[in-house]
Image (cartoon, rainbow, N blue to C red; front, side):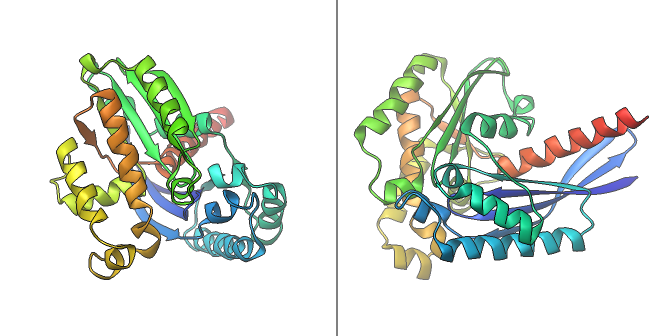
Length: 301
């Protein structure tokens, strides 16, 4: 048996995450086992979506976080890592300077990826293996700056799109009806209600909703449950969500717009349930890293 450790860094609009995963090789069997997850709520989107660049204050928070992540990876003897940045960095005019700063001081290479590449990495999670080929599935990943939607039919990607509708943008009042209409019209062009699609939900907010619902592992969230959770959370102020419900400060505000996005997608597509496999871009990065590692070994032989 052989155990390899890989790391994925996801620099999102709300938080930066370091996922450490053990890949256990035992003959022909390969098992991916999450070792630890470190999450730092930097909120790059607060700057990126309001002033168009990352302020010095948040740039320093990002750098300190990346240095800490680098030290953790070295202490854990990581075989390979990959660092990807998404919507906030895409929207920041000083992103190239930040990438250079992190490379110089933390020796981490940050790759700024677009929405379609995000979808490809997420697809690497082996989503196709969990799908029933008799119905369409809509993969919805709600982030702070954007929402990635991928439609699967018969286990294959039918259509994919990235929309600049994220929780932080909504909180800042940057998203209006025309933005949601764009999502609705696109979904109606690629999904038919009569086909009874199911949603696969991704992102920290849907994962938190799933925990709050206290569902048995593997059981979906039904539309009525999502709506009830929305009404329940919305009845509390942000402060009370933190004090009384135990939500993290950086989750307590964004969970409402995130839930609203899921409810809208369910309404427009006729989906009655959300499957929550608690996977995301970090997990996809790990899978692609391992595939690249195996390919490089094969080339050396």
